[in-house]
Length: 74
Image 1: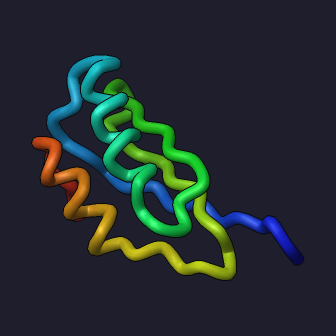
Image 2: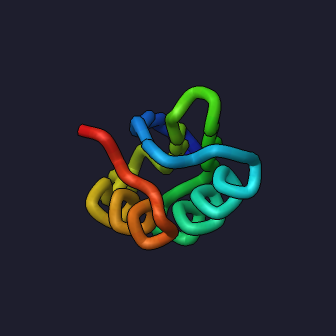
């Protein structure tokens, strides 16, 4: 169906405040197919909603997070 989304959550190390969350959200939201990003410094995670028919480029997401100064845990 049109408009369906999937979610993926990544563990992220190094976020300590709301500003950190905003940096991650801004970076990841620029990636093609991403609909919504919710970063949580207290939860040490980033939840990404993306278009079901446009698979998430996890490598691009990880690079965006690293480029703004944080580490994606595997």
